[in-house]
Amino acid sequence: AIQEKDFVKACIKCGLCVNACPYDTLDLATIQSSTVTGTPFFKAREVPCYMCLDVPCVPPCPSGALDINLLKNDSEEMDISKARMGLAVINKETCVAFWGIQCDACYRACPLIDDAIIVKTERNERTGKHAYLIPEVSANSCTGCGLCEHACITELPAIKVFPRAMVMGKEGSHYIKGWDADDEKRLNDIKKVEKYSEDNSGAIDYLNNSDDLFTDD
Ligand code: SF4
Ligand code: SF4
Ligand code: SF4
Image 1: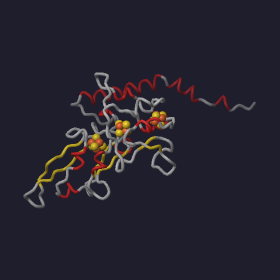
Image 2: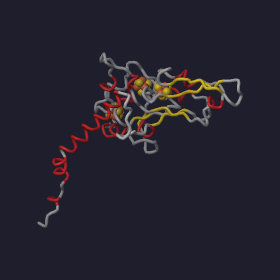
Image 3: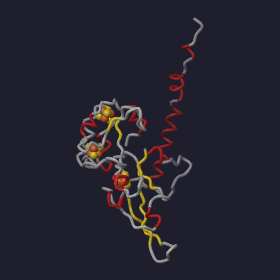
Image 4: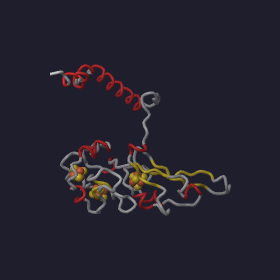
């Protein structure tokens, strides 16, 4: 999916996606909002994204900030599960499932149940008799729709959606899973980009060279 910084650059702040959403999920940010003024955003605790199968908010976008091609699956059909609006993060301190209380509200609310979010069982050593049923989010599948945040039973949500760039981290090129062909491909892709930059450094230096802008004439 398009990165948040690229999205902010591409969005022309026309509000067509906001008008197209049947759930009134989206709003345009004001100067008091947590994101760039004029860009669409939503407060998942109040109104989450319901992951409409026909994704009516995307086709009206005239700028490509919301890119229909990023949502197409192998059969060239729109697939909302490819959306990456954010990533749900669970706070182990306030999620009561980590206390041993049975709660699966977020798990049940997830449209990608058993994919974007699973429930793991662990032995409760404190009681010696019970199991913990612990929710776990998969960064590979979570769309950031916020239905889990909306459903969370704690006073303030123990599961919350954040921008992916804020919480994903980045492994860099020093760590590679040698046993994973996809991860080897990631290293090869990084090498190709570095080689391209080296091969074209003359052109880039030329473009960035501003010496001739500052003459004595
Ligand atoms: S996919 Fe989400 S944001 Fe888009 S129209 Fe449906 S509910 Fe609204
Ligand atoms: S339709 Fe596209 S360009 Fe217009 S506000 Fe929405 S995201 Fe931005
Ligand atoms: S934000 Fe929550 S409900 Fe939505 S896909 Fe991710 S884990 Fe599931």
